[in-house]
Length: 167
Image 1 (cartoon, one colour):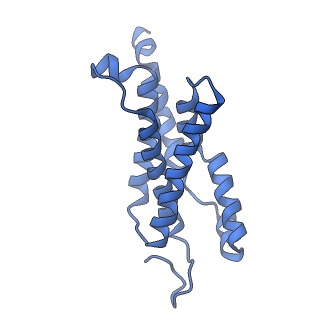
Image 2: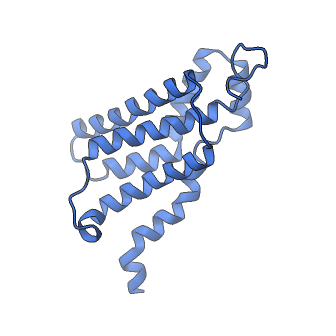
Image 3: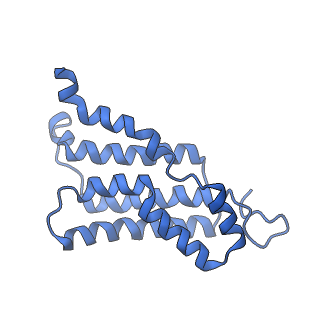
């Protein structure tokens, strides 16, 4: 029982990996809506993903859990959102992609990283100060946006002759 008490945060985070690793899946219904819709449809689906994506919610919950002011919460959520938008736009536009299973696994590690940080893991186990939180949140926002971009590039979008944005 002592083992569970001491390592409960690690056990809990490993149980959450499957949830956050599947966060960038696109349902068949959403695929059809994207293929038949216009730009507003993309914006709506993107907003829905940002507000309901398990990976975003778990990571941002871990970030804002110890924050006490609305100003700090807004600062960190904005840093994450800006990072997310940068890679979502540029990776999609320039057709930069990677293995989406690997990206989703790394995104799951961002949730584990934040749990480790929140539980004092850097101080307890690595005998060091936690890295800059605002910088880490921005970098993980970049990573999360790249994950969604990679998934979007699997859809038959675009105006080329094959109807596929990225092969």
